[in-house]
Amino acid sequence: MILKFNQYVIDIDVDKTRRFYQTAKNITNECNCSGCRNFENAVFHLPQEIIQIFDKMGIDMKKSREVYVNCKNQDGTLFYAGFYHICGKLLSGSSPWKETSQMSKELDEKKLFKINEDFEIAFQNEVDLLEKNFSSPVIQLEFFANIPWVLEEENTYL
Image 1 (cartoon, rainbow, N blue to C red):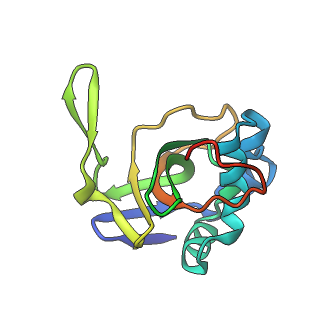
Image 2: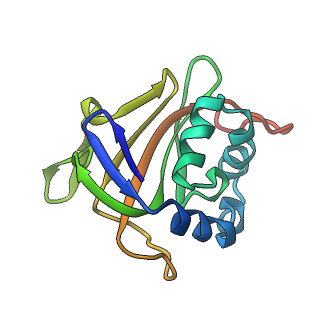
């Protein structure tokens, strides 16, 4: 399936991607910190437009390969980032990360596709932490999002 997100054109094998995520572990199987637990629960509270885009690609949002809290926002949400893997090819577009030195990279926010005011994505060929049983070819979906705190415990990031 060919999908276009501004400059990104991707060719996804949705069936292979969906089959992988059916057996992949939830985020909290790898890390049980409050940030990961919150993200896993917060995906159920995201706007339908975000859930539908991920579902269309075959991705189970609870099964991110990497997720982390960058900072707290003044409105009480947390700014998260992370990534998922997709069976497919990046036909056009490039990584949102630009190298600033041999040891560092910086995010080029102009390369992000804004789903809504709180959720942006990008794609790249460079893949980190690839699961052993993931089918090739593979691309990485990066996300950057303001996510509400949904756990019934104290938000330790505030």
